[in-house]
Image 1 (cartoon, rainbow, N blue to C red):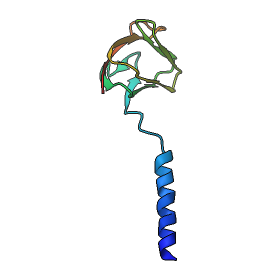
Image 2 (cartoon, rainbow, N blue to C red; image 1 turned 135 degrees about the vertical axis):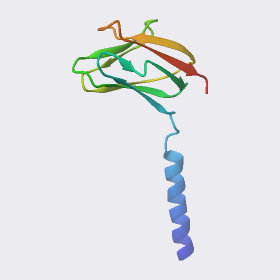
Image 3 (cartoon, rainbow, N blue to C red; image 1 turned 90 degrees about the vertical axis):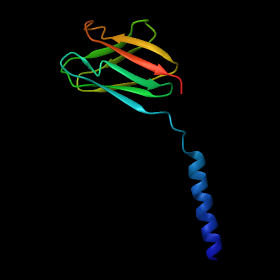
Image 4 (cartoon, rainbow, N blue to C red; image 1 turned 30 degrees about the vertical axis):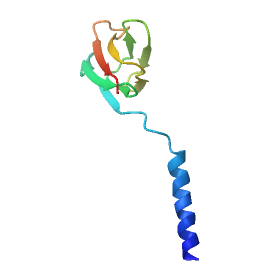
Amino acid sequence: MRKFKYCGALAGLLQIALAAPTSAGEVARVTINGLAFSPPEIQAKVGDTIEWVNGDFVDHTATAKTGEWEVTIGAGKSAQLQLTHAGLLAYFCRIHPNMTGTIHVIAD
């Protein structure tokens, strides 16, 4: 009887492990305070996620200089972008163009 309980528990754990999603990478956090991205330059890997946390009382964007993507970050909120390819990603706030940042994305 004990053997069957052990096998059942093991089978249940195996099902959970197989159903669990694979890791999507790390999360790199950029804070926004005083109309500035901090840090202004970061390094991340393909598959990682960038999370911007807006500590300002106004909305901001993180907009790729290439126009490839744009993330809107509401006042006091956060927003994310998953990195899909390697390269140098320069970005700025479309609302406050003097706010700039750079993401160095390396292949995993």
